[in-house]
Image (tube, rainbow over all chains, first blue to last red; front, side, top):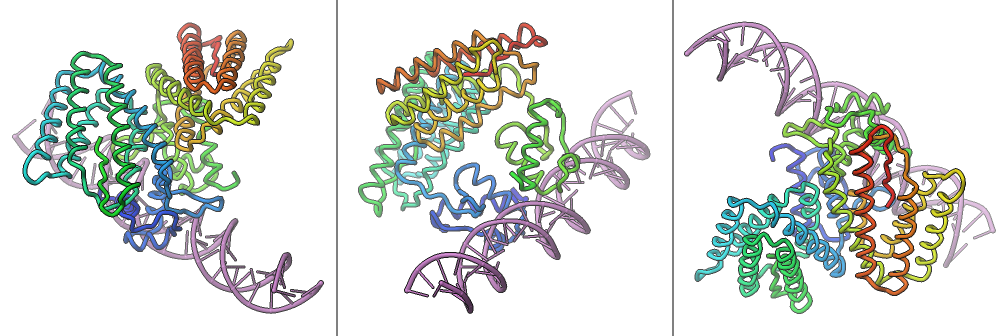
Length: 224
Length: 224
DNA sequence: GCGCAGCTTATTGTATACAAATGCCATTCG
DNA sequence: CGAATGGCATTTGTATACAATAAGCTGCGC
């Protein structure tokens, strides 16, 4: 992460996710270069990458703008994600090893612990959640699938609302994970896929509801 | 297409697809720059793009190699493609306009014509086939889905065999297209998705068979 | 006042020089 | 003899200068 181009990438990406760079606004290579403390060369690299990831879009004359997603676009992303993660779960059910299953159980236990106590640790929950899903992708053993999912997973974060988390939703995630583990135990790919698809779609509805009703209190839950 | 970076991109991509750059071989920015008649800067741009499209992969120390796909990898790609095109067909069934349907019919008629006469014109068939599928993507109206499909569609061409086409397979494609049109007429998304998925998977098996049995006579059919 | 031509300025594209990192090979030490 | 180490060669990363292109503006003609 110490190479200038990586720093620039992370910096710009964070600025987009945090809303520091407003959706729809134009971004110029030189000013980004200044902000990141590097020259234009690594900034251009980063912009191309972010463009491929659809965080940035370019008009017909090559000028760059921060992507501006509607709720429909986000539903689209979630729908794709539900399908792809369902597919991953199905593949994983056929291939998963005992060791991977054990690691998933550990992550799910820790994720439960993170929100079980008196003061819930949501970031810790999200971290274990991420790892839980990562193991499934590892078991699915399709590089292509992984890279596609990466594209579609981090997009919704773009809506930069105050992130307050609905604990009930997080608990549900935990239970859905348990059902997923049961499906894996039985090597039942269709079951796993169905649970996973439902899991992601529930997450979308929690997300959409939180954003449509009260954006200030913003009970956002991106956990799936 | 006149910008140096676009020329470099197309040039390198063609060299990969034609087999001029051997799968697995290392590629150096400077030699590519010479081959393309540009400096390293646009070449680097192209390499990043081709890397995102998985035509090129890089090792842990940033050196680039031409991707080398196994048959399993290609089946993986086809599987993803079947799923995504099925999804696209389902979405399209809900949204497609009369005009788009009419255009699809025209493409399908012309594609039939291309292989109907005494000397079949396979490239022409493939062109109309491409347009037929493009209209579905247009009707599906999901930019994300389109860009993902693009990634997964052009990969199999990497295996550079003598391209002789099995007319029977092409005729089947034509008939499957007709069934797809029926599904669209009835606005039946599930039907459309099922037909499309079968369509792509048949194409994969035709492809796989052609490559496993006789690679020299190579009855390859990428048409779907 | 409106629209267009031509100029000016802003922004991106390309080439090149140099810096940093990595691989490779030879040499040395255990 | 094998493994580790040091230095040289190769390759990629970064900065910067300059070229090309697109946008915006000004003033002219109508």
